[in-house]
Each structure stands twice: as structure tokens, then as C-alpha cells.
Length: 148
Image 1 (cartoon, rainbow, N blue to C red):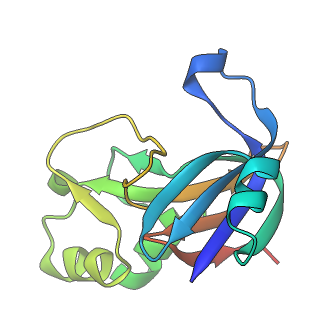
Image 2: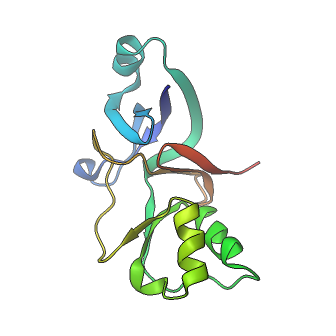
Image 3: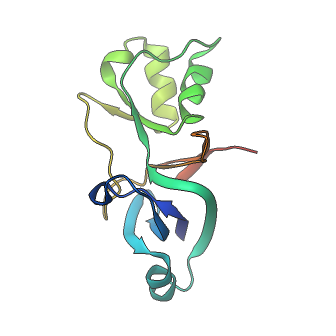
């Protein structure tokens, strides 16, 4: 199933200013295309459209210890609520915590990399409101957090 996630899109080549009316086309767990909403809507007329308030961008990389919580699952969910889609392996030494991260499809990285949204890349994205609050987190094409 194809899904167009649309909102103002953060683009690194535009000095950090969000570009209005843009979208990310997701097919399964991959990004199929990134571009103007009008063009992608015309090219993929059957795609489901999810319009989000706020700013859409790549999911975030968490590069520190996971926040405290009663269970490993809750520690991972605390990250998802902030738009995190990747974590450094060094912070998952506890086998139960690593298993919870893997069950949630968090990307576990050996070193830090700059998150991007690009065709054929993994569909990890987040939408943040004007106040910085994460509204939606998508991991590998699946919505894993949505603020009510």
C-alpha cells in the first residue's frame, strides 16, 4: 500500500526552512519518493493521503542513554513519543532493552549518521508541531506513535 505523508517538509538544502505542501511517499518500509504534494498526488492517485499539521522530517537519532521507565518497552516508547527512529547500539547493552528496541523496529546503528529522507531509504519519519512536540512517528513505514 502506498501512503503519502504530507506537511511542511524540512529540507537540508533550504537552510532549515520547511517547504510547504510537500510529501513523502511510503511503500511498505521504504521511501518511494519525496517531493511536491501536487506532483506526487497526480503520479500516485491511488495512494492514501495522511495530512499532518506541523513539520515533517526524517526520524531522529537518539545518541544517549534511553530515558528511565519501569520496563524496557516503556523506555523505547518514550523515545518513539519524541520522534526517535534510531538509537546507537552502545546504549542498548542490556539484552532486554535491545530486544525491546528491535521489536519496535528502531534502527540500531553502530555510529551516528545524519537522518535523511531519500528514495529507497527506510521510511523513518516524524512530524513535529510548532512547539516542538512530536505529533507522529513512523518507523519502517508504520505509525508507531500518534499524539491524540
